[in-house]
Image (tube, rainbow, N blue to C red; front, side, top):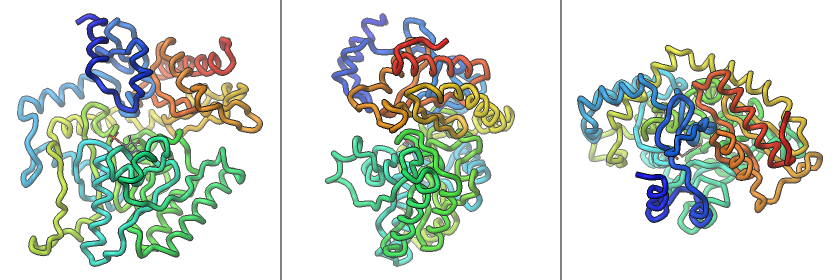
Length: 451
Ligand SMILES: *Cc1c(COP(=O)(O)O)cnc(C)c1O
């Protein structure tokens, strides 16, 4: 099919996520045909670096022989059979692996098919955990300002990004919101921001722990709000406060999991052991939609009873534990070990940090935030006062458009330029990508070319 025909059909029939279709339909759509390594190729055979890992998913690159083979091998056996009341081989093997590599205590794996459904499950499990023990009052949740946990109604109820979530407010259950420690925009800097967060959490838990089921947090890096890195020690102290006040701690590792931050999970950076943990995105290397909610034995045991007691977790999805997805996840985890991915991420993170260092001196680069291979560059109109660009100026969008012209795909978060390359990117690929990143930013904010 020709590009023109595909574009016309796309316009006629496809409603794109997180997209104002009126703007989108005024532009020539990018239509991807194939991927190879860390590049994607459109139907007109133009190549682009996947500078945001296809929205933060991709780990080993595209069209990876080992991952492809895992899927075709499983396909010869069975594509799907349900996990409702029966099991399949890849789902069992993957559960064992996940229990092994996740923080201590998380022994039980409940599968689903997206980060949002994984979060939905964690919320329902936390609620019913208390319910099953007769603590009927513990039914509200604590979230952090600007949190993003996915787009289903439960996940939106613990979300706190007004632009996405406000319109749905009448449909949602109420959550308590505590400040996220956004050091760059806190007058007390990292230390002040951290204290404000811990202070708010402490006050809230002291007053109302008996009505709170759980706290949910994006550990170490809050993603969708603008790749905002927590001050050191904050996550650990939050977890300790929750433990002390008998409030469950839910780690949403959907974005940060699977090596993204330089550890397998962001919780590992501070030795935090959550009660519930949600993984998705990178779980299958970015190949297929599989997510999982991990729980401790303590939580699992609160559901473990005679059927007549009605403590069963009545929740599931058609494709829960999909064998193809679990098989490719297993193959991805094998590559993590064979290719020493975590060591690689740490080394690459350091070289990216060095490469981006000169950008800090540019007049409109407010802050460069980084943890592992998660990078956010906040652009500001005035560097001294940290005055943001007007929303309507769409600097982030324009910088990303420029990056695309120069051969790299990324998607901004407001005025924050996002750089989340596949973990498998080589040093030379990363060098080219960071060059494009710098050129795009300077082009849009200074109207010149970087030499
Ligand atoms: C992407 C994301 C989700 C939602 O995952 P989906 O697979 O898109 O539903 C949830 N939490 C965090 C932290 C995310 O980054």
